[in-house]
Length: 580
Ligand SMILES: [Zn+2]
Image 1 (cartoon, helix red, strand yellow):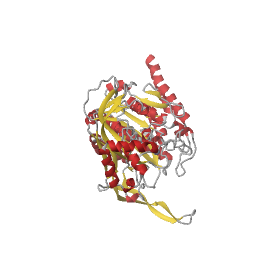
Image 2: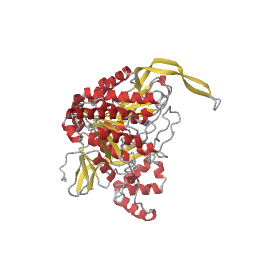
Image 3: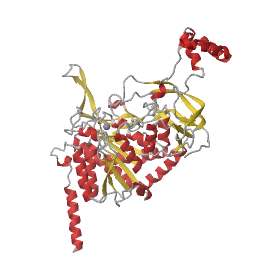
Image 4: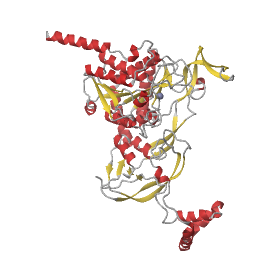
């Protein structure tokens, strides 16, 4: 009897889950994406029935609501440390970073339910879904993507601070990004997926794909993703009726002019994950295809990714360990990359003929893609990038505790740090910022620096008790080096974390300094010669009294050593440090 009651109870639970339709499914025209409240209510109700599912809330987003993580674990273990001990893999899926690109939100709701309902949870992979990342943007619901083919209402791209959250991972301006970093570093996934929608040229594909750029990836992972994981995803999606193409068709002119693979830098989710030695993908469904097709393509992609992660669970674990160990010992790191145009592949592309007709708006020529003229032809595929700036790592970086945001982000990303036990004078290498370019207008709330030129000097610098020492012998070395080296495309220097060093604090009063400078030149023949040589080489200097005074000042002991000096020191030799 007891058995029968249990059976009845199980059937009831199954039916209940089965009956749990998502707002997308319940909508008649399948052109509807769930609101934030609907998403959370749905998952809460599902979690109540399901011991293999648990919801976790992380931090807060800029709008004051926490990030909700949906975790599915076949054997009901929800402790991330224990999961690692059990040698299980973790797949993290991010949804709704751009709320106007919401397929992942709706597809994940259905997939979570179906995996539970059909008892199809992978046994060696714990699945983590960020229910809706840009909550702020999602609540700001409307129709802000003018060309998109559904859903009929959706959230706005910017968050409450009007930030594009898929440019915020490295700088962490939004609370959303900080909560994401906490999730990533707590659950330590081997694979990350971030679901998106793309605009641009029309073609026959419902979905395009961005993967971690192979040349930026550790070779072990690049070899596996290129030959196995990515290759299988393309094959599996084709079999399922959603043939894919790499993202980027039409980004460089008409699609048949070729595709350039996307170079993700650490500001993007995939680039940020790559610094953590995580394999990552970004699905980009195409905005002109009907919303329900895009949702099902995303659903299908996730199904395939999950099943490959289960199939290769052991291998993914072994590779992650190998790569973590290799990166800990890696000596040279790339900071900037450029497309290698000498290396070009060919891929088959299924497009629509690009035609021109007279515009009803301007009366001038306008482009359109003719869906009645599909074509299949080979196009060039540029998929190789070369490093344009590389750097040898120091033994350690010394970060003054005054730079608190750097310290906070390093802690969040589980960078191992020690602190100086006493005030300590160190012989180390310091950078002086020689030159840099800054745009006139802000980008994502910053005046991002580029083309940074450095003058490294050997220096004796006093650091203080409690300043941070970061040894560059960690699995997270890439994150450490790429953020701390000022020339890195997404370095903390580039993102204005250190801008206060770019301003002078003291100066001389020229009528007073005249006499002091004259005396200095008299007392120091070497300085006199230096000035004379500089005048001979530079007529502008020779013609300017102010410039010559400035020259003497800059070469005097009065000149501030910290002006333009990047405050993070590079310890180049093994030095015994008293640490706490
Ligand atoms: Zn997007």
